[in-house]
Image 1 (cartoon, one colour):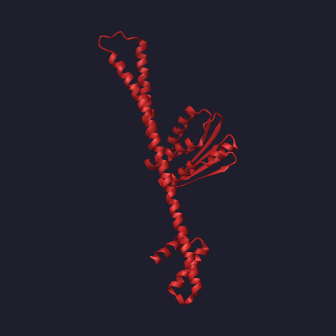
Image 2 (image 1 turned 135 degrees about the horizontal axis):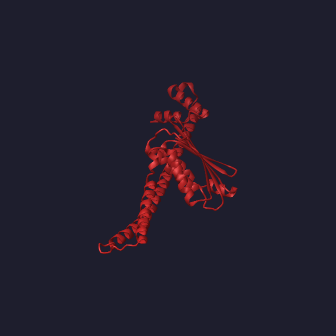
Image 3 (image 1 turned 120 degrees about the horizontal axis):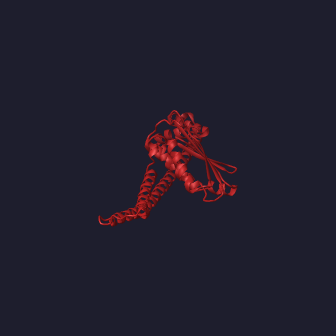
Amino acid sequence: MLWALIVFNLNILQKTNLIYFVLKLYLIGIKYPSKLPVKLLLWTQVILLIASFITLLWFISSELRIRQALKWWSYQESIKRFLEAEKIRDDLLQESFIIRRNLEMLTVDNLDLSVNKIQESVKKIDRFHQSLVELSDRLFPSQLQYSLPLAIDCLLQSRLTNNSQLSFHRDMPVIWQHQSTEQSLIILSLLEELLTIALPQVLTPISIYINLKQCHNLCHLMVQITYPDVSTRVSYANLRELQYLCDSFYLLTSGKCFYRSTSLMLTWYFYW
């Protein structure tokens, strides 16, 4: 057990020269007790115990961060599903009920239908169809199985529909090497979550630059947001949800995520 602990700490802490040296001394002291003074051997034992304690704390802290990130991601997904269900109940189901009632009223004896009534029914059916298309795209964008850049572009277009103050600038490849649909959906969901968290609900213009690259098996996504003032940028840079987002990205894709702040800008980097 002691030997396994020593080897474990040696692998974890070998980049720290001092600790690495101490562990080497301790290993020598175990194999050749006569070659090391007793005091030096005791000191190496103390330092080894401290290193083991620090390693244990690091693992506990890492596990807590993972749990918090997973809870946050699960909560966000639950909220999305709840809102979609509410939208179906409040809009689509009500609309389908109205269409059904109108069709029931069109009995065989009632052949004297005005052009306006017919057009009104057609418009309702068209709206109902469009709502179903939008719902299916929110659940799983149809473009995602063909191209991640195309799916991202559609996501940004939907953001512009209700947020005219936003200005998107994108640099994405036309040709995209196919990846797993599951991973592409994760990337798109994380990007959507990032835009939801990091974009303030203000009327002042906000510029967003998105750069997507692919080099062999490595993909890189950069999202840069320019805020209207420094105070807004600082407040958003300190959001705990952003750290949860990075941790979730790491857990779900085994990739790397970090962000930096400069002047009025916050820039996120995603590698997978």
